[in-house]
Length: 273
Image (tube, rainbow, N blue to C red):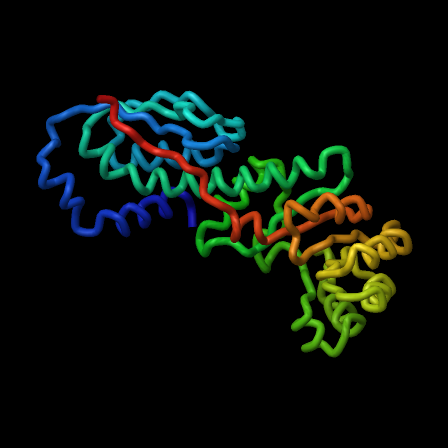
């Protein structure tokens, strides 16, 4: 689903049969000036989406942009200025803020984690743990924050998780079956211990997902297998432990928390008095 359709449905959800508060005020003939203002520091993401929301409601609204996606913004910064029909601004306000606050929250959390990896070679990846239908937007916010996108869906990389492996009767059997059909997609295998990792390497997998492994075992994995298979640490990754995990030498760290446990950025829209 493209962004125009997502915005259209989001506005329909919010407006329903009409904005009864704004309509009853009868302010259609009044123009106003409003500002989106940061209420905390962080990384801005989604400003173009927010603007598109306003222009979907009213293409005649005049918008001046002060900050762009990727900027580190400070509490009190003006982000955009909106001029035009008062009722249009009011009807677009909440949906525009919902997108901007959430995407900026993801970008900020990602940037904070990426900062912990400064000077290390490990790359931070997102996951498929995203809001239904908003995956492209949320993964965009991860990139704005300095992270990297893992697979976008079930269609662009083969990942053999625990249930796949059980269904296929083991890692080796699963990889062999995939290789019979697959000629181009990378194969990633989830492993929970060093013995399973050894089997994944011997089976010819391209990447191993080290699921909730101890730091000690990850160090051993890197020492023994880093030159034979890509290593990705995952499971209970936090800003407190991400640096220690990266220092083991794993190629990647993936974290679902970037898109499911972030805190939305505090951003407001205020009319000029």
